[in-house]
Length: 453
Image (cartoon, rainbow, N blue to C red; front, top):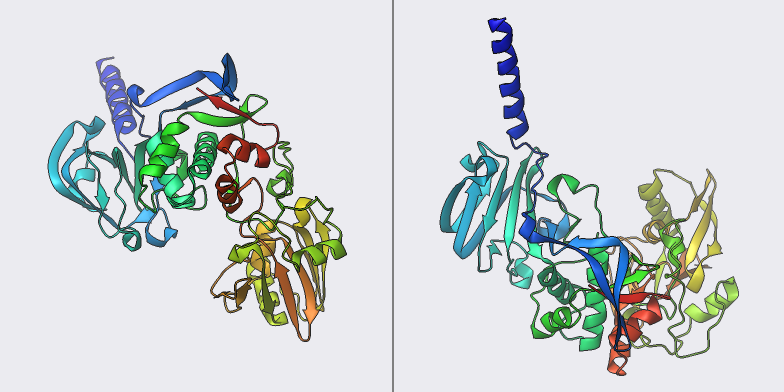
């Protein structure tokens, strides 16, 4: 009996030890003081407030956890990490019970601090700088806390940052300090709504909701100035909801004069995302081939009609298109016989293109896939101001018309980005006309409410 008790005790001890061991899949449980469940909200509407509206999905984040990708945004894994600050605290060991203090911390996969725990915590009351990271933009500093995970792929770096600090650093990186304040405020509300809605399954193991790249929204590429902080502060806590739920606050750079609806994101209906006319002319039905061709070949007066990407064009050889389709799908269609744009969504965006080859025909549907299939990094994309861009791995947008031009195919296009939600450059031009940020947002997001917790 005594031997059985001893054996059971050993099993319990080993199990507890394994459970306590911080492995590659460790979650950092944010301290209760770092989170705040927000369920009571206020509706922001023409200066009036309506108390005790309830979000069906309560906002729970006062802080956010963001994965910091390596230089060039190629991977989440870092071979080594060097952090500098006037006063740094490194916490390591089980439950972060050990601490050292210094001005510089260097870490790699062999660092002794990972011996007991595969996750480290680095914090400061000042601002930290990642040595050698984002140097082309003078290496913006980071606030609050870093968590560093040792994994089989390399080190994973997560910034635990206060929400409104995060918002200011998205505004500066996404739309820029030089934009009018009302456009910055509109961007702030979009960024806040977007991140609070984000739930990345890929980063759940790091307790993070997004990374710092265009996969989500760009964070801390450019250091924010006074206006970006003011925009975050002036809109603090304000989000967009539709039927009491946070919306997917998509946004993009430049429109072709129209935006498109939710269908580019899949079958789930998002009624607040619908095609909008943001030209200065009466709305037209441009889904029909000839009407879209006429529209995209002209420079219809619009908020963004002076922007370089408002209209652009490129020419591709048949082989470049064949190569693009092969890289996208793995299919060799052979010699191209015909290309048809046989489906358009709201705003005229190409939603289905059929390419007939002598070996097989293929249908390409998603806007991202269309942009990749009909682009070559060797081709020149000519903008309406005469500039030329090369090396692009996808077309600026899927608002395109394709026609045969001699032996090649000419593509006429407009806009830059996916085309759904708010156009950032249109928002800038609207703000210059003294349109307030809530009106700007309601132009791009149909029947939404602006809610402040």
